[in-house]
Image 1 (cartoon, helix red, strand yellow):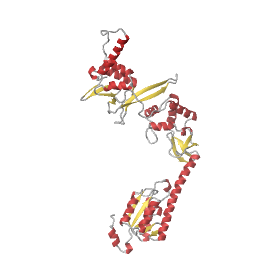
Image 2 (spheres, rainbow, N blue to C red; image 1 turned 90 degrees about the vertical axis):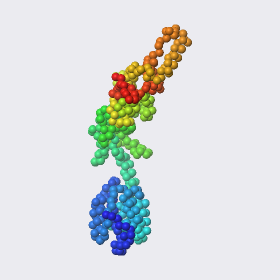
Image 3 (cartoon, rainbow, N blue to C red; image 1 turned 30 degrees about the vertical axis):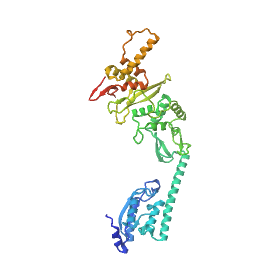
Image 4 (cartoon, one colour; image 1 turned 45 degrees about the vertical axis):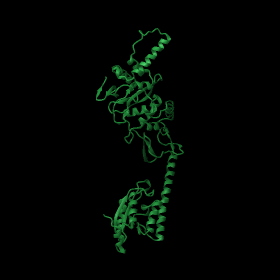
Length: 443
């Protein structure tokens, strides 16, 4: 229906000069579940409009909370249209459908003071631009705001009481489900709880790190109840959450430890073992650990830089701790890249084989290597090793490059590989050089 211009409104007779708009609203919040639905509000007010003998020229509706002033787009547009003169009467189920905040209430009263809003009709009252009726409207609007404020206080009080009674407010952590039926508010998730228990056991008894757990969860295809994989930060939060042995902290600000009524998944002793294990091998900030061959290699499939991570494994029989380094695609260019992981020892063999198959002129640091070897020969001359110029071994640049790859510092390893002409790519656990316009692969 097209809006009538303000000039058309003012030119109509006095008996038909009020042009009504029906406004219906319902919030999806907990406190408004008992309010009439939008459809019911519209139906009831249209029946009342027929009874009153008035015509509703337009219906506007929205599902939005009115607790914060100015946050309802349909309502804001309606107030603007009243100010412009397109409507001068409102029909709604109750005053709290229009306003439950001081800001919105003030706009309504201002429009009435200006003579732009002549009448508000609800199922119980009619408000016009008279002192008594505006005062009543303000009282009812203020009462709705007071109920809002008290309801917020009561909600917080209810959550604290729920925590004091042993039931943790909010969404249950992974391994549990929100039941909400009867006394048991949180119940064990029969599908995911065994995995969570095993996760704690792997950290406590097998020295698994957070990244080990993440890889294991990915291998078994574990997902949350919403179908999401557990990120590394989620894994660490889970391992540090006392909820799993039967206690919880609430609220987040000034937390208090509560004894839960939910069924624990693990013992307090197992939880403490996990905390000791995590403290013994603290996690480094992401990206802070340096590895020898990062920043040099790229994934041969998606050209993302190759990254690395360290895994720790405890041998049950001997108690020995073994550490392994794995290199893999960083997946920055392709989150679904499926290039496999490669152990550092296997990667080293690939790189050494690569050096063997390179032509000498492909190593750009020849002069640097020569200087290092000449320094070694001069040192032998000074200490009188017995070598002469005729007996000095020939400079083996490849052997020196391989020696640095195996025994040099991270910086030295990277320095050597930087001098290789072309990109060093890793694909299907094989290393090869890719030059412009052609590719040469070494198997």
